[in-house]
Amino acid sequence: MSSIEMAGQKKLVLITGRAYPELAEQVAAELGAELVPTDARTFANGELYARFDESVRGADAFVIQSHTNPINEWLMEQLIMVDALKRASAKRITVVAPFYPYSRQDKKGRGREPISARLVADLFKAAGADRIMSVDLHAPQIQGFFDGPVDHLFAMPVLLEHFKKTIKRDDITVVSPDMGRVRVADVWSDKLDAPLAIIHKRRDPSVANEATVHGIVGDVKDRWCIMVDDMIDTGGTISKAAQALKDNGAKGVTIATTHAIFSGKAIEHLSQDFIDQVVVTDTLPLTPEKRFDKLTVLPIAPLLAKAIHEVFEDGSVTSMFEGAA
Image 1: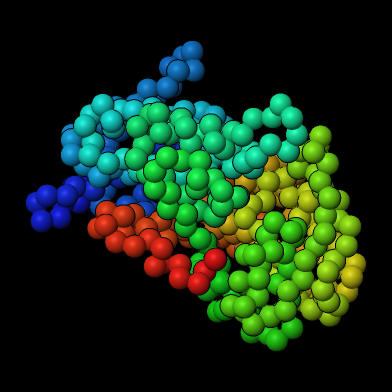
Image 2: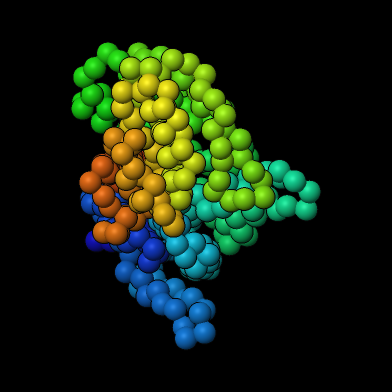
């Protein structure tokens, strides 16, 4: 069965796009369900097509898509699938976007700029989505961009569990790579019973993926630093932060992040000697060329599956993260 029926009334269906079907398969396995067979293809001129091979009428449908490169193609495919579900009379449609596309464009930093994260929310709504589920949004205000429920999931419990099992030391310092991550890093600090340090950096708005470190607030000398962030793209900025920590006497540097985008020279940057370990979740696919010796990848499927189950059963997603952030 590619759907789950409860008491002969509610029907849960899981649908995946082509960006990262392996993650959707893992989520389905966690739920004891199967993915709906789907005919998805790309025509010669680049247009996308999707059709479901079984009825979804009256279903509680969850469309899973990880927005990796080429992000615009996978965003469009998910929109088309949502539209197809709406026209096929699905009862409720939830967009499951572990990595929310265009999340870094959440505000206007300068005049004549778009707020693309809001545009994406509007597109999902126009396509027919009733709900959005995502992990570690780059900015909390994105939840307000969508006219409907947004389930903001946190990968922190997954990452923290790993560190609590693998790190047995009393010289840890939690580091926020910038002022925007201080709140999250402070929770990490509390959970690990460790002091907090903050890196002050300055970003040039005219240059993407570039920032310079201007100072460190807090004591990192002879400390093992765990630097927490929501994503790593090219890795240039976070590698500079790691180098600054080592230059200021840090004993070791571990980077913990949710979304491993790993664009451009990311692997080169993250493989530098001043970085000891990188721990990520698999919200985005990590092909062989994006893996390296210092990398540890933690599964996100159990978290997604639990949240989907809570939504389907009209339970509480919030209760999954009491005190998490």
